[in-house]
Length: 299
Image (cartoon, rainbow, N blue to C red; front, side, top):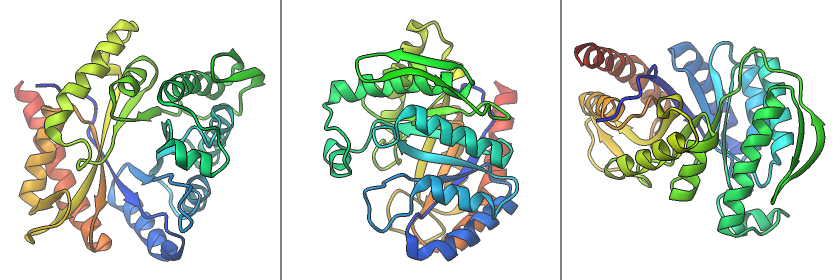
């Protein structure tokens, strides 16, 4: 059993499709009112129908007041780390600290090359990502960044503005080498969707992160664990991911929190997003919070 004892938090993934922005605005405002902690925006910028994630977040920040935004995840190969840190810091200042940066090494070499980025191999991408996280952390702290590495050369960037609160750097990935980067350098691990990293595969991945953290002199409990969960809440059968009634969702997310170590769940509804958001926020979220609290008090 693994429970890193972080507060349990919840978010909603928003569709970045350009022709659905009206519905997306409605969902963002509803989630802001619902008590969720995050609105997550994917960053598949090579999709012609998708809005740019950072531009979309900037717009939606003007439509909301309380909820934070998460890039889930920003492509570091198409958003160089010093520039992404600048964007993250700017968003944090403009929103009063409502930003967490999820980042990743990029979906594929082909997708990166299609948009004009260099075609890097797997080992190069790992090094690029690890160096990029170090650059971003220093830039977000307002430090002068000088980095002469294998994949990055930064000759004296002065970071700033300094965000009103620290901007978390959460790393998305699922393979061992990237998980080790999360353990060494990231503030959190973002797992891909539960259909890509199913629950029975999570413990092995958590151990890789924990071992890498300890080897780097870090405490595994300092690293947040975020799970993207696709599915539907309701009595209907079938569908993709976690599909079932409210009680199934409550029991499952509670188990994933106290036994698998996740502290944040980002919901990707596969149908009726308005109704699904209401069911999630009104019935699932408060019950999971209460169940986790009770279990932790008994342990």
